[in-house]
Image (tube, rainbow, N blue to C red):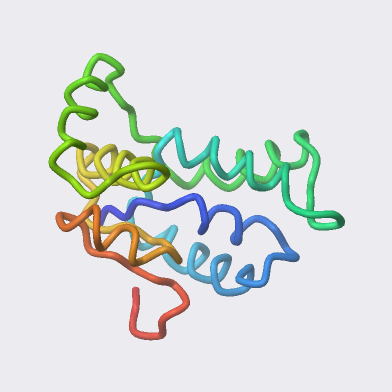
Length: 147
């Protein structure tokens, strides 16, 4: 199975002090050898941004964020490519979706993953992706019945 990985899974999976770290890290460790994991370039950048802007003692510097993400993603996941020339077609498709404001980013990630052959997406933000990605199964690693 090809599973897309949302930035919230990346952040929780690499940040040892994140409240969902154990859940995300265990899910990733269990699923890396079983499935083809795919991540969009946007999700990597979003994870970096979150890790470097967390409040107070939870914030990590850019060097550590880069190292954590790179050591987790490079050997274990495929980075989904996006053809920049198709951005206008994609934005035109948003007109017919309920994706506005910040939700347009989740819809964009779902579109990139779909175009890269993902069957599902792993996220803690299930309601966002159920709404904007009916073509993908949505996996919440914090739910016991999931993969």
